[in-house]
Amino acid sequence: MVPFAGYDMPVQYPMGVLKEHLHTRQKAGLFDVSHMGQVWLKPISGNLADAALALEKLVPVDIAGLKPGRQRYAFFTNEDGGILDDLMVANRGDHLLVIVNAACKHADLAHMKAHLSDLCNVEAFFEEKALLALQGPKAEAVLSPLCPSVAEMKFMDVRACEVLGFTCVISRSGYTGEDGFEISVPADNAEELARALLAHEDCEAIGLGARDSLRLEAGLCLYGNDIDETTTPVEAALVWAIQKARRPGGIRGGGFPGQERIFRQLEDGVRRKRVGLKPEGRAPVRAPAKLFADDAGQHEIGHVTSGGFGPSAESPVAMGYVSAEHAAAGTTIFAEVRGKYLPVTIADMPFVTPTYKR
Picture 1 (tube, rainbow, N blue to C red):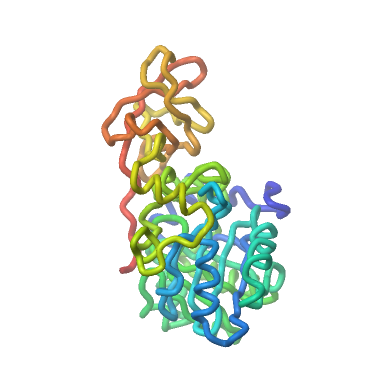
Picture 2: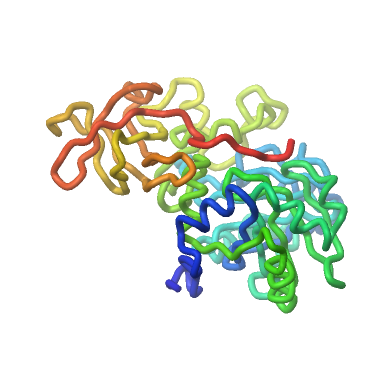
């Protein structure tokens, strides 16, 4: 157990990080991610479009086009185009459900209250709701006996479901690159649900160590490491999350903090980019290792933000930022590790093939 964002969090269970990682890829792993923040945005007018358009003032993402029962990845931006936090937004019909990162949740709540309270009731459920993530190819088989309708769900679908006599809100999503579900459950019922899921022969409890190696293989960012207030979505290779409707010339283009810089980067490009990194050999390259264009350490071009050994990739994997002229896949650069300069290849992400149910 380790302290994280004010919580005691499990790094690993008796199975150990490596076996937990592989078990999640092969069967199903259960993660307690109740440290994440859950916030409801309820439109004062009763018209959800008002809440969606209000939230679009804070994110460069198409919220108004999000259909009921669907979820979308988003991020708050600051006036310089930097990322304040990344989050998930679900259309629940009469309100928006926003899931934010643990370390940012109090600041995010204050941010939403400051900018949205004229149009929305902003309600936090930090203590009342727990969040369990069930991930892996057997996730549906583990959850469906308790809630048969989840078998109908596709990637990024969201629905309410009666489970063991209480109501959960379930999304078909996750942070591992695998098929799976995130389950918002009343906090008082979280242990009962967790034990019921773990009673299935294919489900094991998984800690933070494997959660990190799984998301790294999947090429997914960790806020505070791979993205932060100094990083724009364009630099972070998150342009895919800015839908056409919010881009220049879109039906609701702009209107969010930092749009000038973000639009300029969309047009002109960036000086640095987030890239995947495949070190040669078996030695992991970890943050904050410096990256160089040469093997003598004369021309520094970036740094590693996340790195480790990928059990499923069967090799070291990492991600980081490099100057744009060195960001093409296949480029060889060098990482400084204990005074040596190890060859690293710029690689496409993810490092494993995602298995989302489309």
